[in-house]
Length: 174
Image (tube, rainbow, N blue to C red):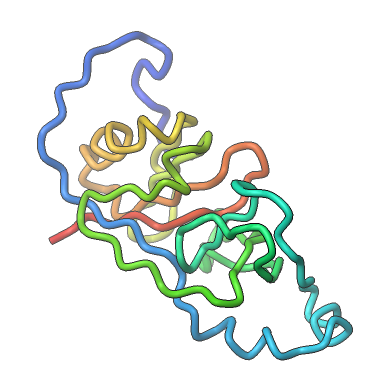
């Protein structure tokens, strides 16, 4: 990481100005060909099929919603930060079989993020990490505003902090 958070542990009051941001899930199209595959064909691609047995617990990266008990999901590795640099990254994600792509409004935070402990990472245009923080999802709006104060931060990645898996991308909204 190039820069540490200023006074990351010091108490402070945040005066939030209106910050337009847009949280995006993954597109569904790349995952559609995987659902008809057999379990052995999925295994050959390092993926597994699961039937959801609890909610929350299986956060879909396409719909940005928790899958409901009885639904089928795929658990697979996904490269969410495909840069030619040290922060290139992939991790396990869930995708619901009947997922519909999330269509969030600017400034909207989905419940799937709001209800979890998150790791938030800010990246520059060349994919280098500029800042990072761990926070409850209820503090996501404030953390986004703080990270976007740095003009070199072009986009953010939210991760589920405990398992470490990618959750969503956050961009500045026009």
